[in-house]
Image: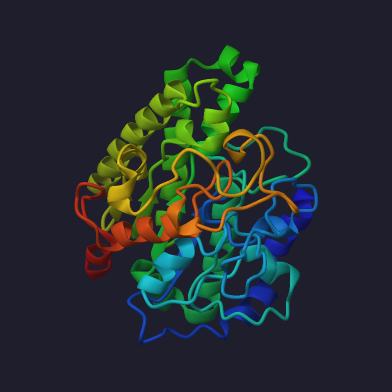
Length: 364
């Protein structure tokens, strides 16, 4: 399975054919947006992973999407990647595997590609024979093959100009933390600080690989308050948040921001906008009405207590007031929450988006 995907990456004639259609949109603020991460920004890559159980290609997912149909997004509608693309004047980037699998793909790829995969981790899963998600390192491998095709098709100078002006959205880390809590083996090998350092180390390596192949403007999303998801509250008889898991997310975000600041000093032309998803989610939970929400504990779609006993699968109930819910299912935000977050990412204050927001990042 892994070799077949990698073989697709080597089909340079195919990518060269695709790259012949690359044109820069004058109406857009950036030429393209490349997306990396997990289920929060996946737009359908996992639909093409035959052995993955982490999928959202079924109703009622997508109920509020323009088509009203499931797309593979883990949401009732659009997600963060979609809204940020809109804000910079681009169409939503198609999923990488949809391009690979459907050579007659009708979407333009001149505005970027989405490599994100539900269940993806920063730390690659060792000895992974059956692919259930696409790790960050493999997502970067896929991007690198696209960049090489760009260089071949456009020439080095134009490819570098394209990449340096494009946005690179990266949102990942939650699944690594979930994996540690779910695996006794990991806790035997690593202490919590060691594991968080390992996450940061792998993340840094991938950022440097992206930088080597043209990335200069990065939009990095911090891990949210994952201990307050309905899934984690459900495990607590009081329905309170898992404070230990939140501590992990907070500490990793600290390592992440320190690493980003260091890279900005070390790498010429490297710029970033970091979104503090942890703080804004926590504020939304503590004072929901100030942010337009009224339901922040229970999921909108699911069944049982907090609608988190059974996940968002076909034939379960879902709420009608979806815009008032922070969580669509037991792990993922609603379309409304994604929209709210994207507003802050693009034009927000330094309280949540620093050292600069995306609007300023584009102008750098």
